Image (cartoon, rainbow, N blue to C red; front, side):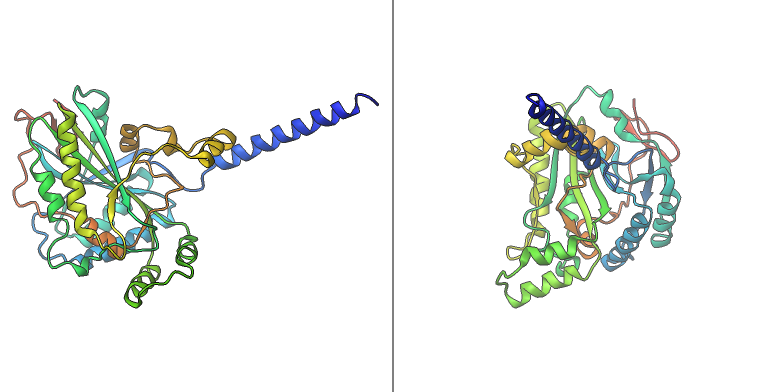
Length: 337
């Protein structure tokens, strides 16, 4: 009888350990994709985008949401720039690449859309310094950023200007990773604003956002250069460009700061482990188009239409070596020379 308490303690310890293992296993089984596996890249070239309105782009994002939600997938829309010019890339899993191609072809019937290799493979062979930065919502996701119909000019013009001014030996890559937000985002947003006293117009804007579909998202930039100061300059220019979306009473796009984990994060790491996002470094996140399933940044098609659209490339650079580090051509890989 004297050993009975010890047996009970051992059994309780084993049960606790078993429960922790089950909890950790359950937590690691993420129901949505956090990265793009077997990526398929589509190079998109539109020589005259003048006929396409931002409302047209909003409709594209609306349809894109339905497509990737149906397939429980993830998409990355990317702009890459260097001495090889500026190029538009759409990336998704191979299993839905054909449908994504058809969607872009439907909305941009005059576009040249070609399969290309994954240019990010060059991060393993480059001798340049690589720097990254991530951007998301500055405030709680219930509050919207400025919509495309609130601008008197192309809100992405400043972003395109940054990319078009990239010169040798530098490269600037930019990606917008998207995944449909969970169905709980709207109730969570309503709970978030709760009994907060909001001005009538401000409340209307929040309600308008909650009437739309939502994407979890992250904007991520990667600069390859010979000098870290160059990367800092490019990221500051990008932050200034995103500043155009700032709405003091609502929301804006701002650079994410990598802070130290708090006590709750440390306990979560200890008990159930870290997420894929937390386990990977910044360059790997870019390469695999990682989007944390715990992301609290949610954006709608109306907001996205201002944040991303296909630029008008009137005179694309000739896609030949010409002293550049990278090259791209339809049906070929983007490769180091």
